[in-house]
Length: 261
Image (cartoon, rainbow, N blue to C red; front, side, top):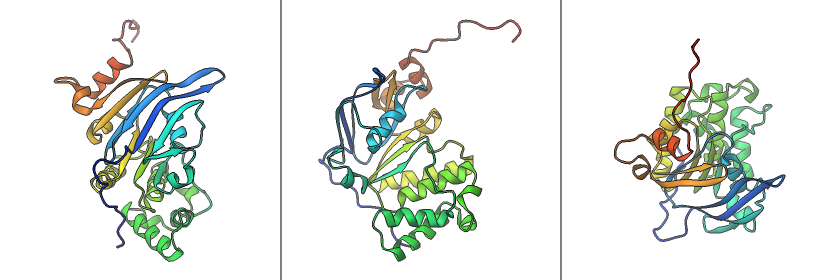
């Protein structure tokens, strides 16, 4: 089986992600408002927030899909969008919406992505089959993606993100719709990538997953960064990540109940 890991990045180089005073306006309303954040290389980083907080907008700006209104973005030491092509060669994307080609098989899609990243056809085909087997999709390799369940589509998207051995993964809700067995498999693969020096930037509403996987966490609310630190720093001595999250976004205890409930 061909190697799909990469060497650990040397110490002392630039952060994997560095954004400064990042803003994105839609109709004069700030979806992201002055975000400053630094993600070290080799880190499993959780990016959390309630619905509408600006997480997906931030991911889209990091991907180069949405231009920021102001502020700066550097990925792997390179400025976005000025070095967008060079950056995209080194990142793996798992977007919230599965941007897959329904009329290709899983194997064909993964091979296609490998070719887009410049892999030779034979290498792309070999890695595609290896990744299908790694994600336990070998039996479905000849099925069209249109026949896949949501969880299978997520596995294919993650497999495609791995094929070119990226240094940085941007993942928006990668476990949504994935069953417990598939989620465990995906988590193990991602942790292995971090052990080999990759950086993972992850959004998820499942706080238990973030608490189990991530080294560091940032919490965003109404487009602004409200808390950031190591998992231990956020949880404190006695609280869970859920407690820290609820306190950070200002959600209080339930004040009213309905009599008929």
